[in-house]
Length: 103
Image (cartoon, rainbow, N blue to C red; front, side, top):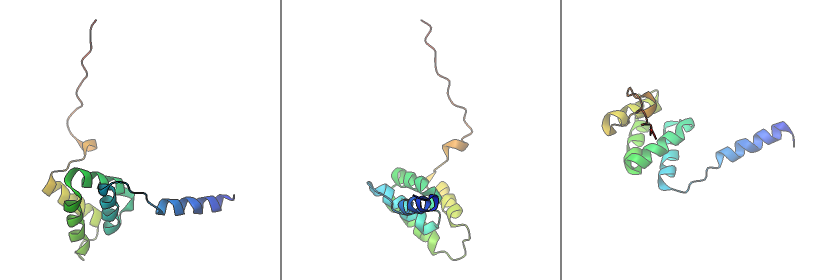
């Protein structure tokens, strides 16, 4: 198989998403509404933590606002303020040290 044919096959496979849970479907729908498919897994996690209905409602509200240029960023700002979601990667707390067993 040619390299270009293989790349086209991979692109077709990536468009076909497999969903087994409700929060996964909600995350994909949010990603499509916001035009941000690269962060679909983040939206799935938000839907799992805070409920699919709440996350979808916020995303639909943001998608209907014509004045918003960066919909995904605006969506995350609303989620942070309303639901209290914080990114653990940017947390200011230092990780806890493990206790050693001196045996």
